[in-house]
Image 1 (cartoon, rainbow, N blue to C red):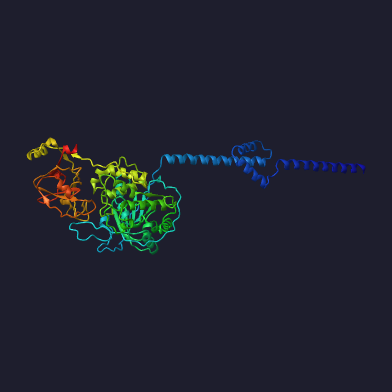
Image 2 (cartoon, rainbow, N blue to C red):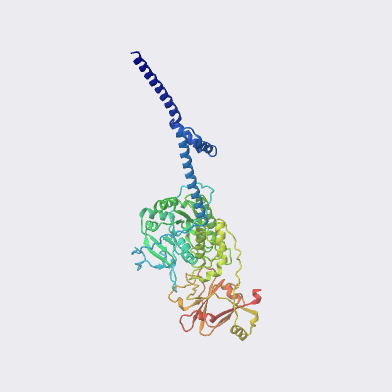
Length: 587
């Protein structure tokens, strides 16, 4: 009995000892593997996120923390931090590569959908490739005696007062991208600016681009807003992918949906371009474009030009019929409403480029009717502004000029200078350094020397003038085309035209010679862009010597050459007409 009691006591003691041991072990295990609380995790995350100091604690805990839970959490945080660092490093390397070697993306080029447009002009049923002077839906010019081009007149819009806010002093910068899809919401002035842009792009090697122009002659911002609301198909929607302009009659919605435009330009109608109170619809148009096209589409403002000093445009009176008053009003308006406006990416200072070029030897001769740009130099200058500003182009080696107007090449130095200065100083006039026109000479032949001797002149006293001849072209100084070459009329192939001359380039004492079988017509202007009021001269087959009386009648002179028997002259006929200038005058 006593032994049984002792045995039971021993068993109970062993149980108590085992239980005590297990409790001690449980306490040790719990202490070693104690779970981390939510706040413990939180403060560890905050600590490990601190640069340098936090990272030191992270490494210490990841290596030497006694609690495996704490050690494992530190190690997992370290791994996550390492992954983030690697991904960030890779992204940085690729971003550097992209910035140093920008990859040109090729947008998917689409072809305008050709449908039978609702055209208001009689006889036009399908879109065709045209030039702007052939698609102007405005007022036509009366009683033109030769095949001429009608010029649209701008209508006077209603003026609405905008809520003008004071912009910040931040100036929109030139974009660091090459847009391939550019749409203008404009009028005849956007037509002028874009006409030669496609030809420049093709000549410079661009092949995958789309130019679009939603054009209504004389349309103001209020007019565009009204058509946004109505959806009216009032626009001549013109598209060019490098092979000419195709036109359909459509709505602004159709034009905006046509493709995923990179750049959309807006502008005010010219007569109100210098009146801030007329810009009330600008923000409405911008908002609509962003909602319709892309919230991040780049909006550019086209700053247009002041009228020619002699312009008869009805809205010129708003600026006291003063060119500088109008130019300054346009500049001030753009500075107050466009510069610093975060809704607008930048501006296209065509107006300043034109004003700069007017200080050159070309003078105030850059319009065809007092407000629309001349088909050659004026339009080309505006297109070059768009090309340089939107594409960041270097114009130094540019030689591309419109095929229809090859004489533009003679003025490239002055044009490039005017454009470069406009981009650099868009709100001030930079005087041209090309104030005198150089006399460009040709090579005198034995036949030239023989002719001068036959009329009693010493060939050594003369040089022969470069004529800048253009085949299939002529001038009509009394028509609406004024100083612009007519190259697309039915009778154009019957003529060769010279470039324009002044008293500086064809001085008094110059000798004119025409070969037998040919004739010339002298065309003259007092002011380029204004039709000659004098009776147009007839054809002549006799030579002449330029005298002072000629320049009392005209400031600018050019010649149309043709065969007396008819037919189409070519480059083989260039030697039929010669002008010799005295060396003494040149010196």
